[in-house]
Each structure stands twice: as C-alpha cells, then as structure tokens.
Length: 502
Image (cartoon, rainbow, N blue to C red; front, top):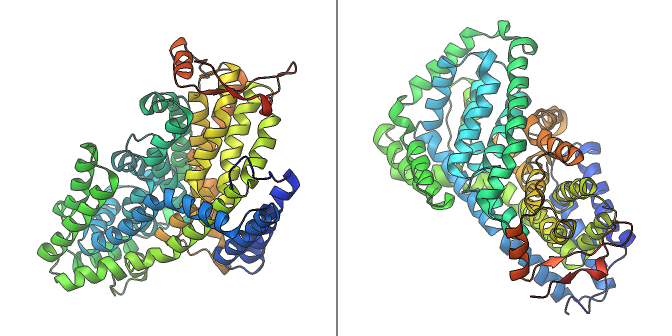
C-alpha cells in the first residue's frame, strides 16, 4: 500500500496507542517498582499494529515498516555490542582500574563532579560516541565517585552531561551527521551553530557541579581509609601503570584520525585484550570469556567487586532487546501514520518562529519519549519541519540544532529510550524497587536539559537564530526543496506544501 492510498489516523486515534503504552509503562515502573519496560513496549507494538490494521494496512505492511526502522538503527546496536566487549576487556587489561586509581589519588572530592563532566565530554568528542564514553571512562568515574562517597546519581548526572554533550558536537557522531542531513545543512555549519547553546549549557552545568562539590556534598566525611582500601585492592589485583591507558589512547588517536567509531572501538578491544595477556597475565581463553560474559573478580572490597564485575556482550543483551522492541514500537507508530498525525497536529499550531522552534524541540523530545529511539527523534521532526522553516525564511540550521537538543540530549533522560537504558545498564544504576532514587540522575544531568531551554530562549528574543542566506535559498531552489506556504494568519497550510519550480 502506498502512502497516498493509506488512511491517516485522527489525532485521537494516533494518540491512543501512545497513551495506553505510557500508562502500562508507568504501572510497570512506578506501581510494580520493576524497571523492565520490555513487555509494555511490546504491548505498544501490538496496539499500534491494531491501529494500522483498522486503517487498512496489512500485517506485511506493518512488519516491513518495523524492520525498516530497526535496520536504520542497527549501527547503534553494533556499538552496544562492541562497547559491551570493550568494558569487559578494559577492566581485564587494567585500563579502567588504572583510571579509578589515578582518579582517587589525583582528584579531590570538591572538583570531582565538574572534572567528570569535562573528562567525559573530551572523550565523547574524540570518539564520536556518547555510549563509548559512558561505558569506559564513565564507568571508571563511577568507581571514583564511590570512593569519594558521592551518591551514584550525582556522578551519573555529571557523566551523562559530559558524554552526550560531547557526542552532540563531535563530527564523528552519527546523530551529529544525521541532523544536518535530514534538514539540508552541512555538518560543520551545524556544529558551529550549536556552539551558541553548547557553551552556555556546559558552563552552567560546570558551575553547578563545582558548587555542589564545595557546598552541597559533605566532602569532610570522605573516608580516606576507604579510599586507601580501594587503591590497595586495585594494586593487589592489577598492574597499575600509565601504560595500562594504552588501549584508550589508541582508540582516541584512531578516532582523531577520523576512523569511524565502530572499528576504532574494536581496535580498542584487540589492543586491550593483548595488554591483558601481556601485562595482567590473562590467558587468551580468559580474554574471550571477558569479551563475551564480562569480567569477574573477588577482591573482598564490595565497592570494587560491584563495579568491576561487569561488561561483555551478554551484559548488553538486556539493553539490546529493549532497544529492538522500542524501535519496533517506533516503526509501528511511523508506519501506521500515528507519529505523522501527532507531529502534523503540533506543527499546525506553530504560527511564529519561536512557536515553531518550541514545536520542533518538543516533537523531538516526544518522539524520544514514545518511540524510544534517538534516531527517529532526530529524523522525523527534521524531515517534517524543514518546509516550515524555509517558508518562514529561517535557516534550517535552527531546526538541526533544535532536533539535536530535543533528540540526542534528551535520549539518556528517558529510562526506556535506547540512550537511557544504556546509561542505566552500563553505569550499574540498578533501577528497581528501592533503587528508584537513582533516577535522580535525570534532573541532575544539567547540561542535557538546559541546552534546549537556552535554544528556546534564543528563539524568543531572536538571538543566534540565523535567517536563510541567499546561498541557502539558491540551494533550496536547485534541490527542489519543499517550502511551506502560510495563510493570512501566518499558519502553515499542510495541503499547500509544495515543491519549488526549478
């Protein structure tokens, strides 16, 4: 069935599977106290599919749409697999223990949170992947925070702030390349335009974390006996040396030489495995086991054991299964036209540039919320709002920045989203039952949610909101780009969106 033949669901019908799924999700997580969103999202796939069948779609149509979306996001699943391997291997190689050791000996509790954010941002920019930064350096920083008796959710908030902000501005990042691609701009202009919100948001977060370190967290109660116990356990069980950082250095060098993130990370697995055998005395069979099943150790120090007994491909399967089901839900919503109907309803309410910018950011966030996928949250609003920005005479750089902030940055703040699920799993937050307090990392990831607010503020005052240049207009014309028409009230008319004549 073609798009033209397919019936479009009403807004009420489109929202029905979304609301029902969110209700079931809320019941599972907050009423039952079980953080396992898999089954509620699977029920959501069934509900969205029923809407599609009601509209005249066949199951074959719906299935094709689901697998189309899953196929687009398979690179993210590949990254999860390699990151699982690298976590287990870098613990065995001593890379993660070395970072924890030097962090505990060189950093002070007062500056730790601010430093954690900056470190994760630098690594994420270098690697081009927030997930790689969270799963490696972020994991080590969780260990340092544990040594300083800093609550897990504070450390996780700083790690997420740095890692996902670094990903947002890295030219190696997939979402950073996706946003300008779907809005018709180029990646370096996109990154330059994002600096207007990136720098203030990072500065605000840095100052907050610094203030928390000096005035909120009780650093005077830090147990130096505990820190000494952790560092002694690390030196007793691992060869601690700056040489152990070699796998991380190799990965960052390869990334800086613009090798794609996935092969760069896999090289890190190989180098880490070799170092584990040479320096840590591990066997090849043990290295294979760590890559698949994760590292295992008993030091007698509970904080070390709980932190280092992790990693491996199998540890990622919970997250991967959640990502695949969330993608299936997003694919079903897109194929049945539910997402399009919801986005069109939001888009039709935008009468000014500021309301359009709010709608674009809000739509990216809402897509993240209901579809569970950062790729869809960038691609769908990016495609659908581009004609509106062109019709208003504004550069689509405003849109690419908006969908990055509502998509990439908000992804880790939604627990059942691919980004949020990975953060919770990789950092060992253990969101279930009495540990729901660890969800506090969400409001404490200051850089992630302040950036969209700053962007909306700019739109309101028309600051850092570039108009379309003559060069852009010529590009729209030469590429036959869609441009929305507006009625006398300044409201975009969906049925009058047309292609320019060349």
